Length: 313
Length: 93
Length: 97
Image (cartoon, rainbow over the protein chains, first blue to last red):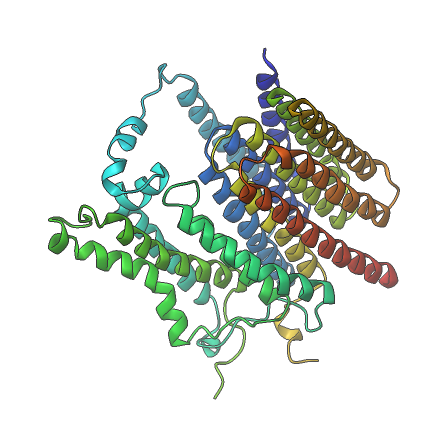
């Protein structure tokens, strides 16, 4: 076998081994560390599969933000009294069997694909010029499957509402607990002060070039979200009150703008969610800008969690 | 030359992946985190080498994104494991 | 000329690979967390720095060379800050135990 095949096999073996350890880990914290490492390795696998957009999203959201979410969740769980008995052997075996069956079916489906595998990529590339975009992934997300993407944004907003609704009634409208200690380390404050502006520039740039090169709204938004989370952990900013009007407006602006543009489709171009020819790219970037805002707000709010103090006078 | 770059990328990747053994053994969570940090930096180096060798667009951006986020998870772990952000602790200072 | 540049790149990248190897060996073999942290930051900075140095001559445009340097600077910043935080956390926990 060639050198690349050997490298691929080694990478796959390490990923599988790490996944197995993450499942078998005794403590939640250790399992989360394993999960973050797993996400990083998966990002490299995606690059190896020539999918840099997915790799960036995996590194940012799958490994970074989800890892932080899991750590926050495990911290909160650690403070609750153990309410129920751990799952018995029968449940564990059933879960393992189900996972193995699904993984086996997926592997069989991929391995038994005809050669060359059926794909819509050539068609997607052919009509890309009409949208004015250079990046086929962005084209699929915002032009060909725009309704899907808009609904995904709605799901994000629903997730935030779900997290907020966990709070006791008397805390509704208040702010979540601060993300960092009362007296943060000077190194953390230093890092936040210097990293955040650079991260904001890079995040915006990544969204902007997503029209023609790998990048896009998800990736840019996730990086902006990570910067805000670091700033909140360094106590340079506090989580906003969930009742504040500007926050709620900005949160829904992503799917709302998307929907408005889609509804204006019949007026502009003849059908629901159609873009007018020649004006498609500026419109797509306009929609994506608000999507970036929504994502950059949603992810930190999910990490901050439900409000834990009263709304105040 | 490109072959040499790709071989270097492979070596770095396998090396830091072996470092993941530290995630297995611990003994503390900080050690596990350090292994993940090393994995991140090694991944960045491997990605940069691969980007220079293959010329695939966007791989450098992935490395840049990883560079921004490499500290992110570690900082979150440390902040969480030092018992920060507990609701009942706010307002005590 | 181009051969000398290629040789420089290979040497720098080879040195970078060596530092990553050294860092991993240290991570696996050093006796306690603080010394492992020390090794980690060396390999973070020097390993990646030498690789970036080796790749600079191969950068297509001055802008992409600048991108490489900014990337290394970011990793320096993050890994140094994380090292400080880890060190402080270890010392606090050491005092508590």
